[in-house]
Length: 112
Image (tube, rainbow, N blue to C red; front, side, top):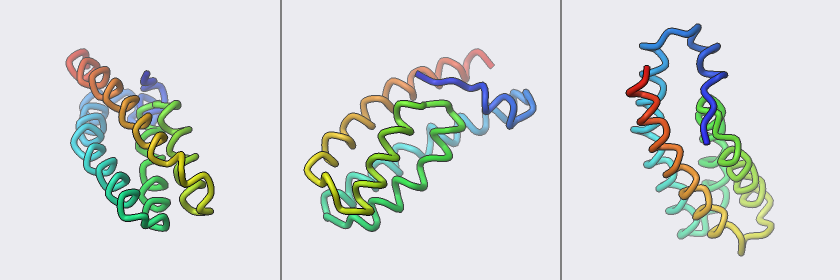
């Protein structure tokens, strides 16, 4: 689900720094996803697009490619207001992927 290869390079294999990045991701990402859901519920597609865009770097650092692909789709659909009917399903799928990633990242924190 996750691939910390990029993070290892980015943090120069500094495990303390890697732990900080992972913990920050675990602390902040659920609130960011909640914002996505709120924007979707409010039909504020511009804000939804911006919020999705802001998640991309964090997902890349954690190597969660499947979630990153969903966020790109959410961002583009919201920005262009296309396939609006699918945004709810995409957001749900994103949450499911992230729940699995959170568990995996918590385990990786213990290993570092």
